[in-house]
Image (cartoon, rainbow, N blue to C red; front, top):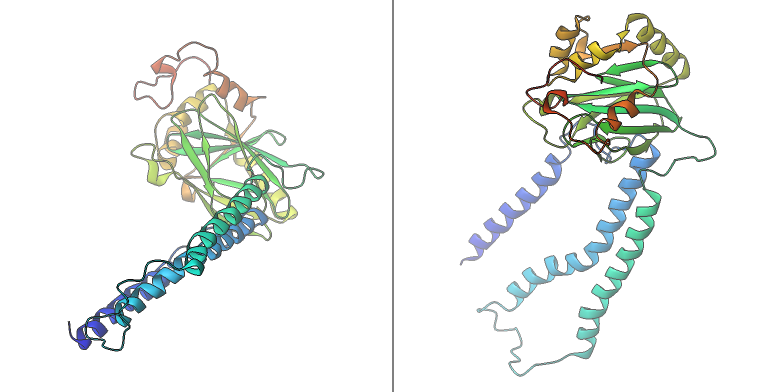
Length: 319
């Protein structure tokens, strides 16, 4: 292989590597924890950077030394020293075994501390308490319930900026994965169970949320907007939801829970076609999330006609 060919290959590798890092930034600015908009996402980003930096202690020497050895001890390099009888080096063995062991120890401590600090069930500020939002995963939409305000929404969820928010979640269909990347990591949502996620936004803004677990043909449309608002903006938004919403009763919930996109649900409920498939509800029954969740914990099979995720789902019974 000629020197020109080697130079061309190195150039190609460098171009691909640089392009990879440049294109990795071609995502929505506030859709990832790499552009954190709250303390939880910021802590996740810092943890990733620390772990990556520690791991690079073992990775970088390999990436640097392998090409150097290949070049240094190439066949035509007559200046390279040939030592066929070399077998052992104490200092080299200490480095080769000691450094990886030390890295594993440090990473173990980092993982243990981060697991405790980033526990999704752990309140951000136990003394302050949480702003409560309940979430029910459906096909293919998210229902957000505000039990203390008596309203619910589909397609968007709003909360006061700078205030810790506690999401209590369950699913009334298959297992799903709830995520607001700019505010926190994902967490699985399952029927018959409750999971919890705590988030907080540092400043007003709108952030993309989505289901990250494939759940059928409408999976790609199961997105929503998470909106951090000033107190005045949030109060105005709550008033709008109360004024424009429809009652969330057994009939409207069955229409909503049937497998459909947000736009199709708007049509089924005969509500205004708001952008993004947003739907507003008022007059929320007490303990609505518990009623949905407990349908799957009676110890008896739930008939297919009473499972919203089933193609045989029919009206009848209770939510």
